[in-house]
Length: 148
Image (cartoon, rainbow, N blue to C red; front, side, top):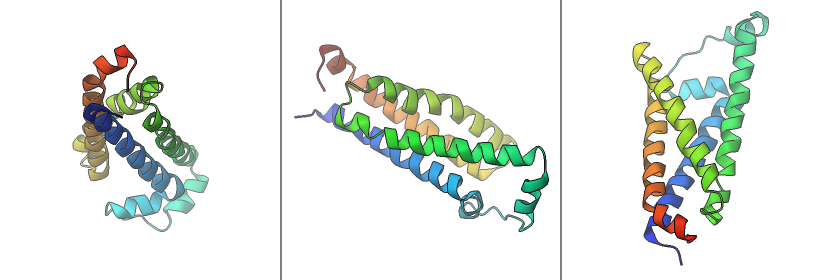
């Protein structure tokens, strides 16, 4: 039977995975829909501009590819749900390190350039990092003993 501390960690892992899948999938499949959800108006000619601009086109397609990486990272967070002790390293990389380095980038630029979507995602990543970090701290003793 799992402890309450492990359940808290697993809830954080599950929440992280779901949010990564939603953000990565939405942006990867339809950046325009993703922008519309946050109230950003997209010019209909914008997509035609992307096709021919030598800087915007690679930027657009690379960002979509990285969005799919985020979705796949979210899918991979299923593994720690079944064995949080065995996949503890994955939790550190996907749920601590990634949001820890990406949240400040999104927050600082979102606030500086007044982009609501970046600010929201930055806050969301920071909250996930803190919540999962808390779960890792409270399960630290159990992990050292080899228990879940």
